[in-house]
Length: 138
Image (cartoon, rainbow, N blue to C red; front, side):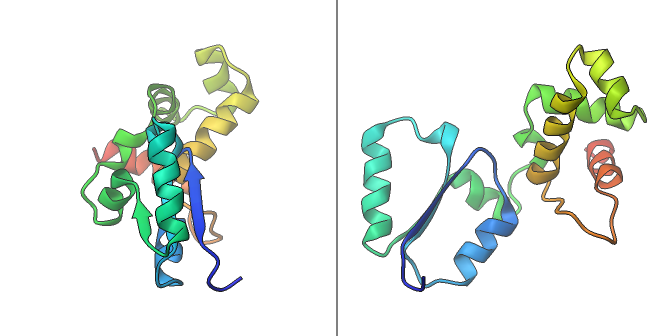
């Protein structure tokens, strides 16, 4: 609905969403990271500002949009561990065995890694290889 204020709360930075949110509107939008909303008062203030037509962006999102943040730094320790094992050429099953977690948990970590590294699904690119290249390029 055009003109409807939108506030996105996310666990991680999705640069594609942030770009689309900012490009399609002239305000009344917000994008916050859940783990950085520490006070109810701060959250309510953000809601009011967005409802009033302002744009509110989490500083971490802004930093990633302008390229000021190392995207690997946004990964959790567990995700970095998964990515390191991926770089060793291990399968999801082997990663799960090495980390003593289920293959499903490995898959969730990998999907989170793809999102944080801004690697959307594509018929042209192999996200696993691109993630490993980003890891090796650090």
